[in-house]
Image (cartoon, rainbow, N blue to C red):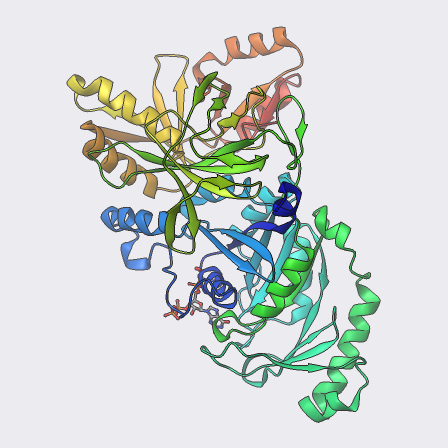
Length: 526
Ligand code: G4P
């Protein structure tokens, strides 16, 4: 098969949702329909269960599970589908944000009872940064949920994207009858079943067909006709290009736990979701079908065995063909590297692979050379862009508790930050080290791992900081002046970029007003 054919076969995507909306269930059902697993229950939820929330040993175990199910590959109707899993727990949101840089599209799951929730909004903001195409799956239609029109309005308002329903529910909850597929004109009848993968499909060319009345009853048929007429009047016709450019999200309705609407979603997905596309490095835009291999690291996972410091780096192939044992340029370090231990992820089995194509994810065993954001290439120098850090929300200063282990502490901190566990900011003044995270859980993880893997002990002192803002200015002199005048509040991130540590929102606003030449950014890439 030629490289162009390999690329056009591939669909690499992620499922995102607020916890409990049904991401794990939908993942499992997609794998069932795709034939990658045979029975339900095979995919372990990687979410940290309620009782384990403060138990970091449990979290460590969960990390083990999540690496096994991090990337799931399967074939469906001639396509090679790579599904990238994202952590379910909010405290690991930064990990999810980075995984989203490695996908070409996203399926967003919304619970029809709860509607758009806070985590959904945050995740969508990240999708919007790269105009990632999004398909919305409104789940749990077997429950009494919100009115579908209200749900769609909420998606448009809160997620700042236009929607186009491609299917429409016929009632909901106890009286849920099924959905009408507006895109391809068929009725999909609901039969609650956690086991059957058979769909009850009735083809109808025309919504006026009396078969509709016969099948779902006159009242529901009348309501459906009114709804479809209204939808066609309100929402413009579906334009796949608007979906591909991230402007419009097609919407499907279903019930993942009942296998309902899942095949419909998968069939639409393989038809409209994009194959791997071009991506920008600092120097130019690289097309996937270029001969030379290139790719970037978006995730690093520490080995579970603390005695060995091996790590698995997740490489997204962007162009050309990746080959095991071939020498590639590690762009940041400007040196050649070779990987003999390379893993593909097919469902839960890890297997050694010899080659991979754009869209594929390869696990590379690494002893500490790679960090998140690194580019590998066949000689070309530009680094891939688009793996930003986001301003953390919780900040704590690191206090070394054992002066004899200072070196171990520093090494441990650097390595954990390279894995993306949290972000480290070093103040210009006094070289104070501050760790920033999205959730409180990471501090326990960090403390635990520093002790067990590096033999270092530390304490954390809470700091009341509002945001870390990366700063820049077109006027170098003004930037220098700013840094001088706010010296006590300036730190450097792991790459040495300047960061302004804002204490409160109001104060940040005041500083912004007083220094109009300085730009303040909430992400490290701007
Ligand atoms: P998540 O990964 O997004 O966090 O959600 P997950 O799939 O774990 O689903 C959360 C809960 O919602 C689960 O119930 C799951 O069974 C249920 N669920 C998923 N899809 C549907 C659906 O279509 N209809 C209904 N009614 N429920 C659905 P749980 O009680 O937390 O777990 P379990 O004991 O059922 O596994």
